[in-house]
Amino acid sequence: MSEGFTKSGLSIPPIGLGTWDLQGPTCSRIVREALELGYRHIDGASMYENESEVGQGVIDSGVDREEIFITTKINTTSWTPSKGNGPSLQNKDIVKHFEQSLKDLQTDYVDLLLIHWPKFETNLADMLEILYKIKDAKKTKEVGVANFNSHLVNECINLGFNDIYCNQIEYHPFLSQAKLMEVMQDFDLIPVAYCPICRGDVARHDVLISLSNKYSKTPAQIALRWLYQQRAVSIPKTANSHRLKENFDIFDFEIEYKDMLKIYSLERNQRLVPNLEINESKYPFD
Ligand SMILES: NC(=O)c1ccc[n+]([C@@H]2O[C@H](COP(=O)([O-])OP(=O)(O)OC[C@H]3O[C@@H](n4cnc5c(N)ncnc54)[C@H](OP(=O)(O)O)[C@@H]3O)[C@@H](O)[C@H]2O)c1
Image (tube, rainbow, N blue to C red; front, side, top):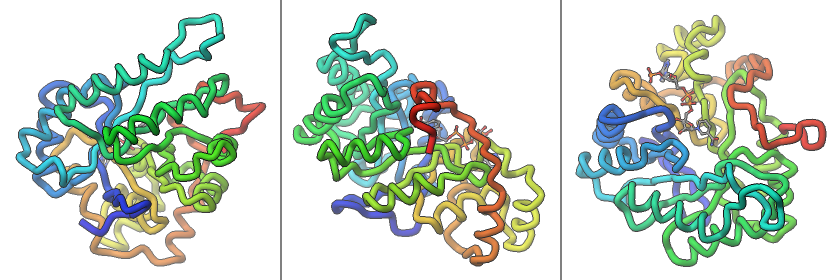
């Protein structure tokens, strides 16, 4: 595995295993196999309802906890402002949910704790403060966000939270994130790409198939390498042992600049995960 991308002294491995939709023994098995193959980064979330299985896979692998970069995410779907009308997820609930993640994962800490979804009507500063308290208590090494558009990234900075570790966003050859990537670069947030192989769609695209022939790699490897050469971390999910190996094997070739441009040109605004919290007319996606 290649060197990770480092910020504030913490290095994140460029390929992680996504765990959304992995359930039961399959989940534990693939996490164990990933770690045996050399993966050192597992992306999870309380919302995926499989953290016990992820934790079991880590234990079964026999790899030291300190060697593994584990991400979890706070489920904020039921968070509403404390003065709002609907059910309110209070600070103590966030901590309680996070403690449950630690228990399920059978660990004392995670490496990265993310806000899973932005909530515009919520007090962002309050929410981030809770996460930073968890960091102060050494239960997470770093704090990050997910699904934040450039408006929200700017908001974090304006609120004084200028050391957010990363922003986890949907990013693959069929969805341009040019503007957001630029803003994240300005503020030194590490980009983490989810759906990096567009849930398998990259394997069916003519240009990616022709590049895969040129480089003797698969289309998924071309997409993952394209992200890596932009210094973006990728977290492809698979339940298949063969594809697990394939998705990790991207460090022995380099895509030429002209081919990088060809892949950028495949953008067709294909978004797999609509961000329901974002009022698009007020705050566009990018
Ligand atoms: N922060 C967020 O809001 C958010 C949202 C979505 C996802 N995520 C994270 O990102 C991870 C990845 O995203 P994702 O799972 O939605 O999509 P993805 O990784 O782009 O694609 C996964 C799908 O592609 C197939 N696949 C895997 N490797 C392949 C290969 N080499 N060639 C062809 N097909 C392949 C998998 O099938 P098999 O299992 O059969 O191989 C699976 O159906 C998630 O698991 C989750 O951890 C985060």
